Length: 331
Image (cartoon, rainbow, N blue to C red; front, side, top):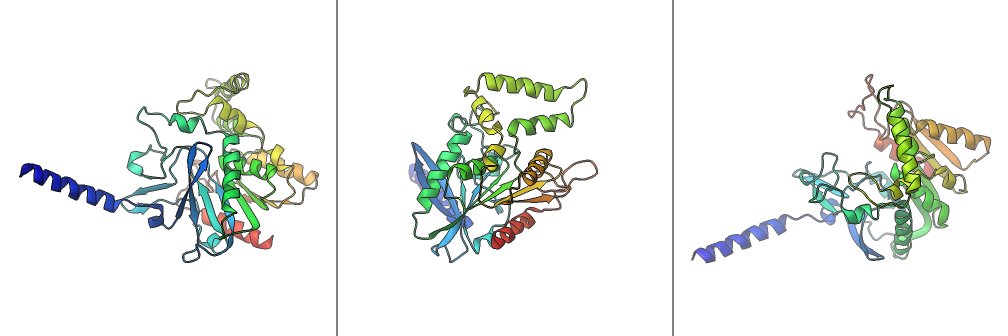
């Protein structure tokens, strides 16, 4: 009898657990899996409800850095998959976002780090993620995904908008420089001089005679260049990743003939370098670029307080996304 009761309890608990399991569809997304080399890649599609099969162009969004699940949730529901509300863009496009390699698609925030990163049982980023967290991996993978998606009957090939934020801006810029499929590029909160310059700029703002942080960054960069194929990683990037993402994206951007929208907060660490690119491109007569500065805001477009802290009460991401749509409608 005891064994029977135990079995019944196990069945009931299992049914409850699986019954409560959420899928991407429950959060309003179409979930596809794509085989890239030997990797299973998660793809989420956000479409206007009821128009999932309507033929529309793609708005392909390259997310920023770190191993974060695409869908982060708690007992109240899911956090935003995109940093902005995608509804206005979904009227005209199918929005696409791709997961980080070997990072679960859906995770409860209680199981993640304080910054919502996925950490394995050793307390580090998964090695399978770190081994693939490379610019060229993302570029080649995403191009193959785009080709796959454009073969679907619900995708129009007339337009392909590629947008990237932060690390994703570098990925998007390089894809646009090597793929003829991209018709429009949105380059948001990127540093056109590369990742290492953002690291140095950030530390220059806070260092002192006794704490020479930026000088340490330059020593680190010397080691990266000397050992640029090194793949050892703990919580940080591999040398190979830092080297690839520190190649100045301006080298990709200045080749482009397609319409490009550059967005940045003027208090972001990358702002002086974006301003340089802006001035330089004016000098060179590159009329296919439009620059949207968000005055007084930081990397994620939050305004800064008098103490130079982000004011999270003022959310500007939706305004930024609406500006993207306005620009696209004009192009």
